[in-house]
Image (cartoon, rainbow, N blue to C red; front, side, top):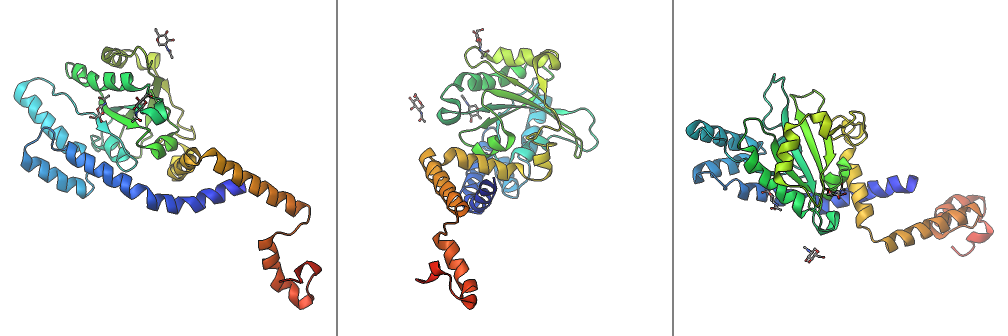
Length: 290
Ligand SMILES: *[C@@H]1O[C@H](CO)[C@@H](O)[C@H](O)[C@H]1NC(C)=O
Ligand SMILES: *[C@@H]1O[C@H](CO)[C@@H](O)[C@H](O)[C@H]1NC(C)=O
Ligand SMILES: *[C@@H]1O[C@H](CO)[C@@H](O)[C@H](O)[C@H]1NC(C)=O
């Protein structure tokens, strides 16, 4: 246990240095490209500047959507957001107004490609994307977002989220707790209409409410409260990424060290450390060489 913790702590700075700036850069870049989708160049450029400054990306999209709604009287089809380790919290809070008492609902489909979903998530994911068109036909609809565990392994591990699950977040102004309803989608049969149907059905009939005390609850769980969710996400991710033969070598090395220590056989580092202390009292027999 002690090994695991210290190994994780050692690994963390290296990993966050090696991985996350690039990941975040990539995410930023994708948001930037995505922001050109349906808006005039001036608005897109303005939003790109806002994005770079770290503003919530959703705001301008919503303004554009509201304008379109006012102009045509129909609901525009919502863009499906893509969540990353860097943007998920801002994205989920992006439409919440101060003092709001009815929750703003976000649906997050946890998906993956070959690595985390064995290539089985294509259907649930494309049906989810298509459901945006169907949702646009009704007044009440959730905001839609994807979390791809092939791209965001750390976030998926931090949430302990498994692929082909649908998470419905009920967002209220901070610091209110966040209700999260979860369910699994059937990877072989799910259609876009299924998403609309389960949205229109009684929530507790189709979903299970995530216990607020659950360890991995992204907002209210103990790990989130103590800011441990992301380190632990990295930790599990490292365990998944390290090839098993490296683990075996590590474990056998450690267990040999522990055996040696228990049997009183000194190993090199221990001897080196013990030598200076031992010298004034006269070198121990084993230290004669050093
Ligand atoms: C995913 O797996 C399928 C089938 O095994 C393969 O055809 C495809 O090329 C793989 N995709 C990637 C990105 O590796
Ligand atoms: C669904 O939409 C997202 C966001 O636009 C996109 O990144 C993803 O590739 C789409 N997935 C499928 C299966 O079309
Ligand atoms: C998905 O739906 C099919 C057809 O209804 C069913 O046979 C299968 O067991 C379902 N899979 C899961 C995981 O529920």
